Image 1 (cartoon, helix red, strand yellow):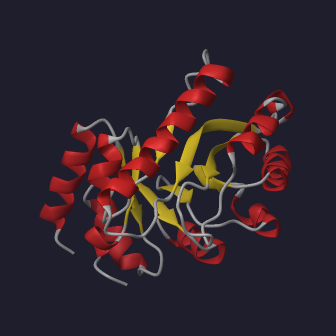
Image 2: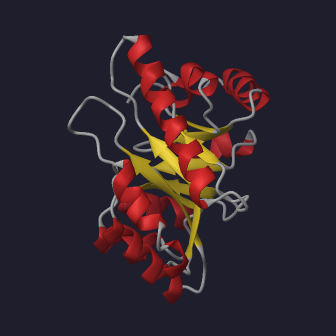
Image 3: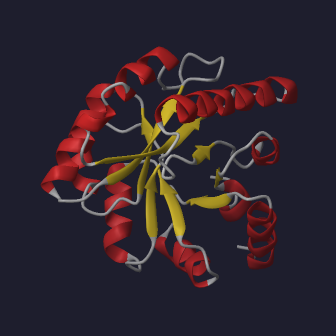
Length: 218
């Protein structure tokens, strides 16, 4: 791992007002530890089993973000410690996170994931679904609604990617205005990965999820 490259990347991202989530899926603990010692505290994992194992083995001040599709029956394993769940894509999942938050006596920060890409394989809410959830947000006593997340289409068409990021920023603005005007916790727009993070930041991302630029290709 090129730690000078990491420092330059982190500085560039933070100077633009965003934060770096280091996507460490499939990477060994030693690589995570090296990046941690260089100053990285936020790491993102896709799979619950891997996330739990790494949380148990690595420094306890690491902030673990669950960024992959999350099954309801797996929430209980990460609820005691997860710093943020990026991938809330249904009311059923949100209810389970709330239930497990109550069991662990902690409010769990979450991002509402929206389907902004052209690929059918991507998960995510539609705006009407999100509004139906947020009309009753007070019932989720153990949830901190922290913002939104989305993944752009995997394409070389920068105009398409930019328009999808712009769509997510518009959704964020709409929800912020309608439901969270006085809630400072609702502030995150998680969008942008190794190939498109610069576009994402230009379109308002506050949190970019970067793996291969840090750890190399999988």
